[in-house]
Length: 274
Length: 201
Image (cartoon, rainbow over all chains, first blue to last red):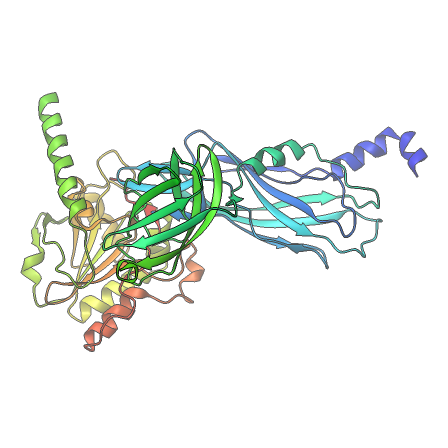
């Protein structure tokens, strides 16, 4: 078979096409389903990615869109035995417009989804993967859009080769939030109008921004008062006007000089501290 | 003219500062306002003491607003609740030149074509009313009770999408709150995160 491929460039070309996906032109964006590998090895997990290239000024949203908007969603059609995981959301940007703040992405973003593949997969035919993607794209105007994305990947028992888009995945990985270092201690004090988030990292932290994972906990557009301490940072976050019940945890991303860390801080009330 | 413009701008900013200091809170008096409606009448919140008042932030070009108008959902709510004596104000806070800005005549033509039946449409092109209440999205819904207290602030329902097909399976927060308040019960879900397009101040 290998010898046959070597003497048959035309067939190689056809297989090359099979391993590729089409970029779909949608309103103000090009969207493509891609993977970090060029072939599937049965039983070895892979990463799929939905890649958006947006026209200047347009944006799509983070899992918590902020004051307005809606995050994209992908519904997967996968062969038996395949399992798609959750979207890995890269660090968003604060997108502000007249007293409102949204969280999202401009220019380009890759939404990575880890996929489990079954061990009992035969090598005869390529695997067809379909994603029904729905999203909201906004500049000043918002447009809900949807499309069907397709990707076909050949199966082989040899180790998966990196795809042409592997560098894209590597770049996107750097934008994914990391787990906060184990020695960090985070806590939140609930005051009348504010949450005061304390991060003890064993070193002073500067240039820090908090992105709330859960909607409706803080006022997104309120300025975040971050004060560096010898051991970390203390950030005052204004409570959301629609927050009606006490919360027990404040979850989100802490961006420190471009690097994102996941945090989950227990919340204690003023009274409990006394 | 430039001087005047700057003057107006600084007046607008100082209003905003005042507003951001006095947040709207459930159970507290809703901020009073005076506004001009699309028929040119002056509408004062204080004139409606003793009645429930609904505020509905609106932008006819926003897909989330369209979800509730093209399905007839918003008109059904307006008809049902104004029929029960509720005062319903649709509010348009899009600034001139921004998406969703309409003249009074354009709005009246739209309301007629859509069979909308709010009590009045408040033309808030300066965004004063929007900022006073902290309206973030279209739609964004508020309910004020007969004593003038705010009893609901948030989304229209529990499906933050632009799909009309989601409406039938949604819990409508505005109806739920009004039903409870009408029967003298406390509103169990008094605040939610509003969803939709941003208000185009």
